[in-house]
Image 1 (cartoon, rainbow, N blue to C red):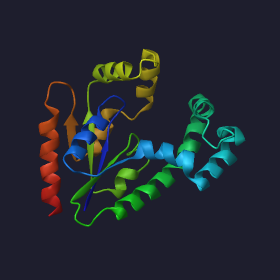
Image 2 (image 1 turned 30 degrees about the vertical axis):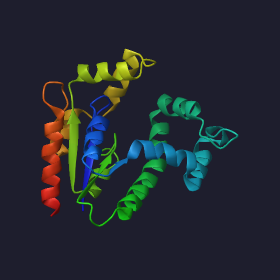
Image 3 (image 1 turned 180 degrees about the vertical axis):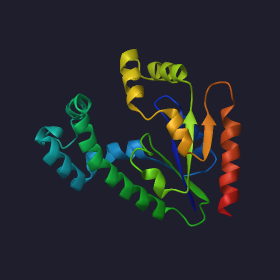
Length: 199
């Protein structure tokens, strides 16, 4: 089974691309969603987060206090790195367990993650797809999707992310989600290639 990573900056459209792959029958591991689940449910990780960020990191019912954690993480880079250092190894282990649980007949599986390169997770995979779009297109998509966010907030997030050119330099394949090139044919071409490589 081929293990393929898929990443892209905020608003690039990697989740849309993954939904097309899923419609074609490909299993997709959504690392960002799983990370949130692990922060809320993984006992070992919860204990580590509470030890590092204080008991206030979790509400009385055991759910993470996302507002508190967000304030800590966005206020200081060292805090963000500290949280990532706790969460990303658990996500890596969870990914490996998920891959092992898939049927042997699956030709390829995708791991979708915003920080796939930054965490080094791409090195555990057989190839990397980067979904790309112009900055203004990405900004407009995020503002339409998350109206509570300001333009300045989104630009700040984009500025903190690895530049697209650096991601593309490490990728084997690029999907252009710029609104000019058709998305489905690009995904179909990769789908056929991955099945061909897996045989």
